[in-house]
Image 1: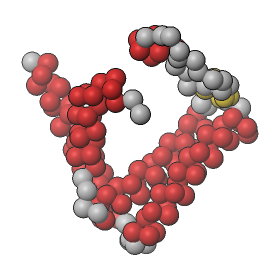
Image 2: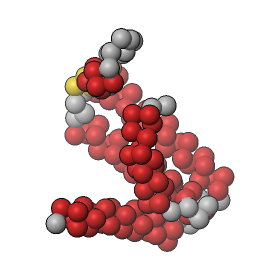
Image 3: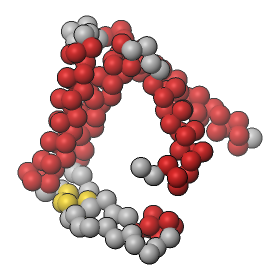
Length: 141
């Protein structure tokens, strides 16, 4: 029974990716050139980074306390529990909304690029998921 529910959940997620990619294909008109799409991807990547930085420097809802992470002489399990994100605090509602909008726009142009190159996003996600599951800790790059 659990396996059927898991398969159903996976199929719903694939369907959402496919629906999103189809919708992007229908509404993308202005920036249809692959060159436009590539530069829009870069632009929204920068906008995501800027929004995160503004959450730190302008709003202050989060802070970054980055230090060297020492993983010498420890097991993988210890490494997982010791690894830090360097982010302290939590995004306020306003900052989270802005970052989500920028990520959404990035995903839009990622879907547009995938459409232009006839690549299925859910297929990519499935392949990457299978690779991660297969390689496990050896996936570290």
